[in-house]
Structure formats: structure tokens, C-alpha cells
Amino acid sequence: MDIQMRLMNRAVKKLLKDIRTLIESTRGRVAQTLNAGLVMLNWSIGQRIREDALKNRQAEYGKHWRMLW
Image (cartoon, rainbow, N blue to C red; front, side, top):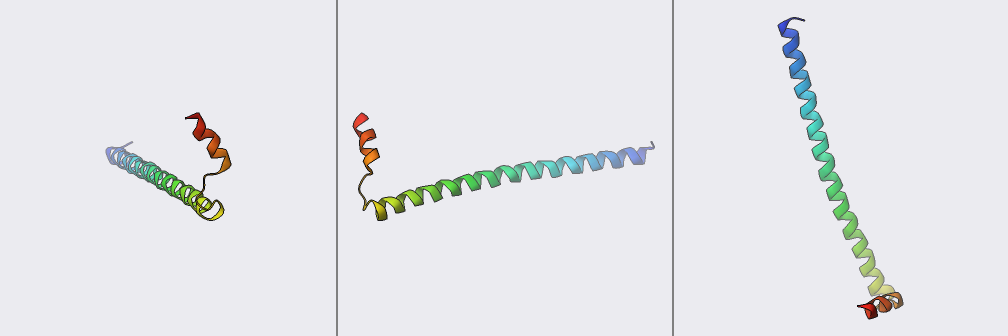
């Protein structure tokens, strides 16, 4: 292989490595954002259940756990 071809191969390898790093970094941020969104969704669902279905009272199963503490 001549020198020009080697330099081009290095440039392509670096480009691919940089792209891979960008993808992995973005995947991590997306997962973190998704997890935070799911936590807020579940909390909101629980809050609505407590407000609407339980009329802000504690569920019966929760009273048992509270006595243990």
C-alpha cells in the first residue's frame, strides 16, 4: 500500500471511531432522559390514583407497612 492509501485508511478509522463515540454518547443521554420521563410518568399516575380513587387517603396495604416502621 502506498502512503496516500494508509493516510486515507487512518482518516476513515478515526472518522468511524468518532461517529461510534457520538452514537454511544447520544444513546446514553437518550436512555437517561427516557428513564427520568418514566419515573415522572409513574409518579404522576400514583398521584392521580391517590387523589381520584383514594380521595387522598392511604391505601389499605400501605397502612400495614407504615405500622412496621
